[in-house]
Length: 161
Ligand SMILES: [Zn+2]
Image 1: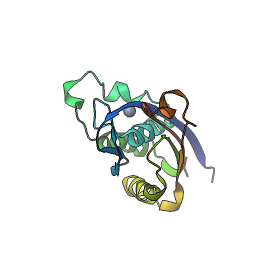
Image 2: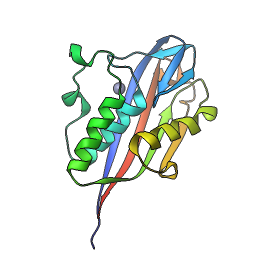
Image 3: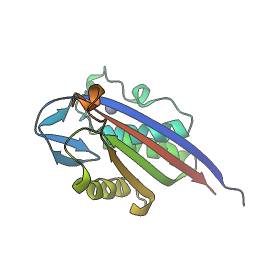
Image 4: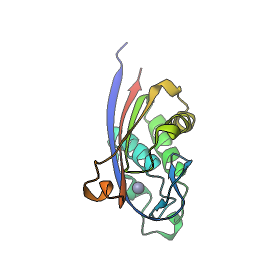
């Protein structure tokens, strides 16, 4: 049997402003900042959904969930991932593995990585060992390094048997 595989790439960046937590894959990470966004600002879910859409050769998430629409104001970003999963199943694919890199100056994510990983595994309905979460800083340079923004990258593999 021939297996068909697809890879997808997601990238996202959001501004930070004064606040009390960052929402990362539904996990509230205490911080002195919050993510600025039209939706709930869950950058990890945006990135993940974009990776799935891109693997399927579909348009970016802005075409499905325009940030100019009142309907998407404050939107729970898990809805965006669920839409991507519906498209994925429609195309007959399932997830092989997911790699997510979160680039953030502070706080350190070490103690939250396990929770973020479990949340993603649950959302995607895949085993946690198929999800990798890597956290990087930006070495105090650029908007991310200066604490003005948070960025996220996601690489995904979809497979069809
Ligand atoms: Zn976003």
